[in-house]
Length: 125
Image (tube, rainbow, N blue to C red; front, side, top):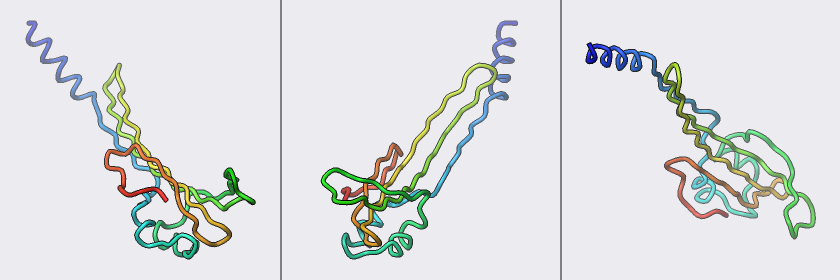
């Protein structure tokens, strides 16, 4: 009787669990910027050719600057969720965020951070 109950509970738990994997945004490639663009020479058109259109645009005033710089934001997220009914949910959110800076229309560099398991390699400009 005990074995039948344990087997029934195991089957019920397996039937009530579900893996959900979400991917949001377009994953930017920092290595593409480093390989294909030149600081002080490349333009916004060149950046769009490498990364695609940004998710957001704005301005930023960093220390020691004379005036604000144009800043583009790229964001990508992955969320792995396991739903086990009726009690437990587990989440594993990961993301990559990249900021690209311009002086007017001229590329000035980038800054990115990632918690993805296979983060792009290469130095930050």
